Length: 286
Image (cartoon, rainbow, N blue to C red; front, side, top):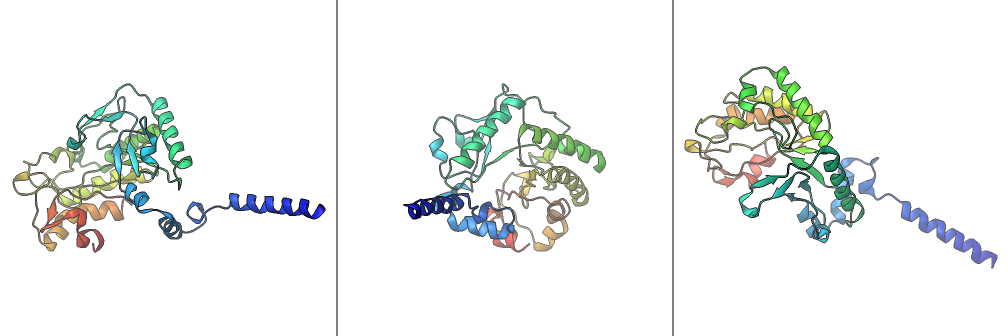
């Protein structure tokens, strides 16, 4: 009887120790590469597929839709328009910071505690010249900030935006736009820092560093040229490698190397006949 009692105690502590064992991908003491490799080895194809999705909205009434996880939500004050295909968003002005943070926390608890692997989501939004939230500060558009030629001012503006993002619980912004405004007919010129590669680089770096220093992921866009002949948005582009190196690549390389941006958004169009989103030379060899 005594031996059975000791065996039961030993079995209990063995099972308890196993339950408390930290899986490699959750162990912050391991190198990032080792954690990523371990996590990928445990993921199903659907779980990997869901990590490619950043969507507007929130858990809604049927959270089971997200049992396989999700990369990120554009949530709290935004909701999807009736026709999701048109990518138009409605912003609900009724949320304030405490309510938004409370909602974010509840959503995060779901993914960390209820999904199989406990992969947290990232809450993201637009913050080009101010966070897209009711009550957040709206600064002059990027083209106006660039017209000041004042990188110190740009840093102060981006710092203020980053602080507001952090207060709202936003951990990734889909900004800045560092495409060059080489054709005034392009409908997104106001989002850029102008046509000069050097000025766009310096303004972009000032913006990005304020966020990355506060552990908010920036997403410079749209890599690499997002407008074609006549200023047509997302239109096929044909440029030589030299032309790219001497102009359009410059601000992107600056925000990645000097600003330490941890994310990048590809252009929607094709470059020299290949979609930018599937262009191995563009994404992996440069």
